[in-house]
Image (tube, rainbow, N blue to C red; front, side):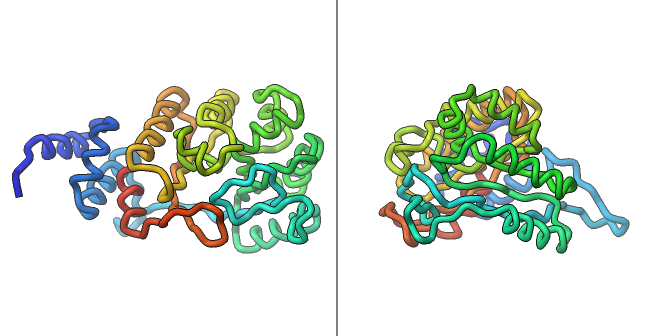
Length: 285
């Protein structure tokens, strides 16, 4: 094996807290085995987050207990990678009743949960009052529960259906009880890829604009990536770069979550990647 001092310089800069550019990220992905990528990722984690310790000197990492709740599966976007959506006329379509929603949240509270992730399809006939009353119902009945709800594609859909400015929709949802916004619907933030897997879904700039407007209004959000289908590694890195550019501007992202495409019961023909590549992308991110 040929010794590469420039790669050593790059990994050394990472260990010293230096930033990685897109070309450098691609090089790391191509050149480093998983264990080395993982060590660099753990070093960066420890740089970014001051370690907390218990009384016995053990490092503490925290988590929350939450529950995903899909308020409807009716959607008119028909993404090729999705096995969840149904049309209004399908026998399996639904919109949760208040009683069904409350039961799910009560089950969460019973096990110490503190947050729900509330998302659904792009229902063409639900008006703004449905959503505002939904949020008010949740916060009135469960004031201790944070509502982490409605992805950027949903907000773009809302603005179109409600015929309201996007920032106004976000403001009214926040006033009704929305606590933060999940990063769903990002898939890959490269329009060439989005046009292949979800041509009716909002574009990259539209997704990012929702997050910027939300951050400017004091709402925090997570960011996501669904990979391992028709995109390239370069596309994944461009996705990460677009997220980082917005984070530099607003500081509003609190977490990043990536997962691999699951092909069962979908129309997208792609060979999913395995756990090894998932861990590599997690570390690189």
